[in-house]
Amino acid sequence: MAVSASPERPAAVGAATLRGRVGPPTRAADVVLESWLDRWRLAADGLPIETRTSRLLPVRTEEGVVAMLKVSRSDEEQRGGSVLAAWGGAGAAPVLRVDGDALLVVRATGGRNLVTMVEAGRDEAATRVLCATAARLHAASGAVRDVADDQLVPLAKWFRDLSPQSDLLGPFHRRGAGIAAELLDEQTEIVALHGDLHHGNVLDFGASGWLAIDPKGLVGDRAFDYCNLFCNPGHLIPVARGRLEATLKVVTDASGLAPRRMLRWLVAWCALSSTWYAVDDDPVHAASVTAIGELAADLLDRDSRG
Image 1 (cartoon, rainbow, N blue to C red):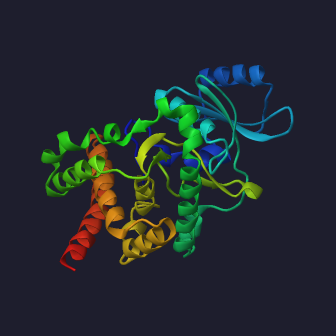
Image 2: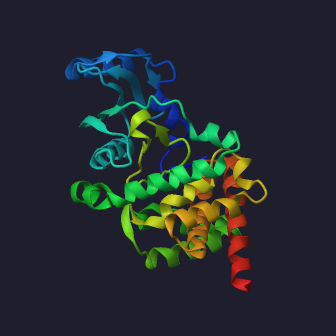
């Protein structure tokens, strides 16, 4: 249920993308992919995939490495590929090659899946995997910023759509915009952020463990990277009775973040995410994310009352 600031919706294609599930491409897409197969001496290893923003193909390198070739039409996706490469495999999928609109990344071949884990009643375990992945990514922030700092989007820019829309959307969004403004002014522990960390964007890479894919490539307060996991997977699980409180405890225990700080960022994020859905005329997702944010706001109010 994650959302981006652009028309692309990476949550819808994340796990399918690097595992090589099928969506038929156009002939033009085949031609583009074939040109990169020739250039990088790759062999197709599955059927091609077409998404709203990219063309993908499971491949093998000359050395036999299983990989995914991704050719993107989106500037945001291309920037994300460059940022992914900057992580150098530290908590993120290793990038083998990147050149303009083309990205060659190691493919996830492990059998585990965080969404399936949650559906099997192991929500806490899945949350801990996401927290551990966030910690690995943030620990490598210095190296990422050394290489790609000019490509990282500041959180203040990421949140730019919230305030202008908040008066049109109602009390929760006005409150979220106010909290976001405060948080953006008082950010601490500034790191390179994945920006879209959720159950579909952390995959099982076998012996390499759980690694992130499809970063947005942001920079700001590390608490932001934990917000999206509260909103996933699906519509019903995030609003189940007691789920927010249970997830909050796991996240704050694992990350060392103060509960109130985490809740404030979650309210701000839900206000922003639901704003994007509303602007995109997607009332179902907008209502779902707003409901999560309102639960977080209620917890904040209870904390204030002591």
